[in-house]
Amino acid sequence: MFTGSKKEIIDLIKRRGTLSIDKAVEEIDLAKTTLREHFLQLERDGYVERDYVRSGPGRPSLQYQLTSKGNSLFPSSESKLIRNIIKYLKTKGSEQLVEDFFEDFWDQRLEEAQDRIKESSAEDPESKINILMQMLEEEGFMPEFDFDKSDEWLTVKECNCPFSEVVKETRLPCKLEEMFYKKLFNENAERTSYIADGDYSCTYNIPTD
Image (cartoon, rainbow, N blue to C red; front, side):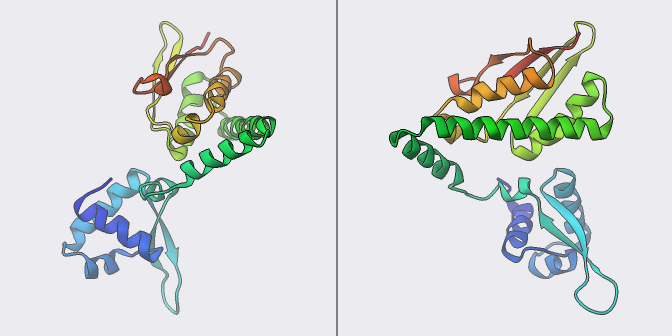
């Protein structure tokens, strides 16, 4: 979580919905040039996005709002709630319904990834993985990748699990995430490290030959 002036900016946008640099100057005891640089850094890092908003006569004003990544900085009980829903369904004998839900959810993720790659006209593995990295970043996986062209191997690390609470109740997301890489890239893709087993990341090794 941010501290200092960047936290103040994030908190103000969260409370107000949108925020201009001029309004931020009124609220935060920093020079306009310093605040503008903070806004630009937050935008480059994917926490805020800009838009021009018209609220009356004259030119529309430049406003910043939080992205989904920015909103994820704030406390949420959604994961625990979903975990409890899964637990409830299982105690009621609806485990098949839980499995059907997750399979459908991962099918939709796969379709979205394939659509993004298709729309970008990416053909080589490195171009495809750059498209996927953006999607994984939006979903909160904190992804990293390494592409070894000489050995024809692609390594993807997911350094955060946005489904960590759910995984405490069912490992279906883990199974389906490995299948996701097999279907998207290569059926011989395999997971070599696993957050649920105490590793710092879920790592997938994918042959690109």
